[in-house]
Image 1 (cartoon, rainbow, N blue to C red):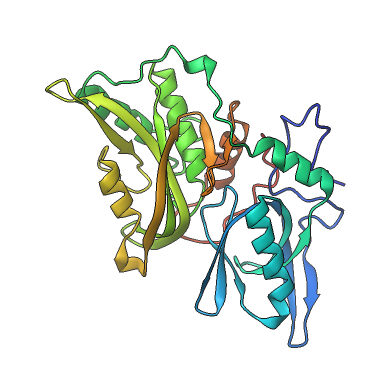
Image 2 (cartoon, rainbow, N blue to C red):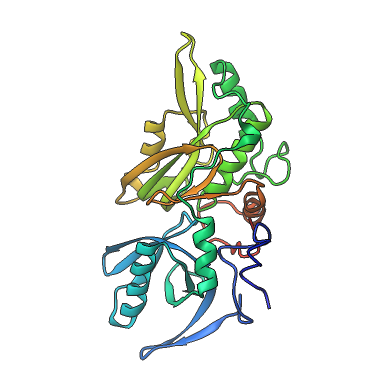
Length: 319
């Protein structure tokens, strides 16, 4: 049996937000309704952080995941929808099951009290300082250095001969932006610089040039540099979305709302410290100081490209 929670004394390792709690974990199950019998997958325990109604269904945001999930607005799902709404309000976990090979939620179950305590302990409003990077430069000295750092980051893309392991999954924008941003931040740190991050939320759609992706949020690193006049400016680095170079945050958010991919809008955006791994729309934070989840997520997605969904499970990744 694969346990979802370790002892709270040692919970800093091998724990996953999508791990499974019983012997049926990762096994197909049959969910019977009056109309049909469908195969469901155990997605694991996670915290719903958003729910919006649209076109006969609800669009669900789950913690960490950038890709949207959905549940049909039917009488059969009334109890599940009510549970999701309550979980969003209280920032508490649910055990989620999806229909096989889709992002459609088939059912949800209550998490245990132990699970609730764990999630309350790691999803926090506390802004934590990062002592390890406190001596790093907060401003890149010039545009040339900024462009050089961008090239260094881009050269770590999966599928390139210059990438080390784990490579950064710029060619698979469907999900994992949180891991890509954290790995980019690590590269900057190793070069002697610190950054911020910008999180944008909403009904986001972006084009890769060949296909479209849909997100409930997106995140990338936000760096400061001195222009030719010595004035400090800020730029976003996100080769998964804009591969030509650093751009303003306005241009980046515009690329996150590409109307050629469908109806799209931004509900909010926020800047955070660079050590923040994930920020939900309500402002709660998650950290991955040892890059455990970062590296594991990038490895899980490293062979993927394009816009195929749903994404592979990262249930084996810890923090």
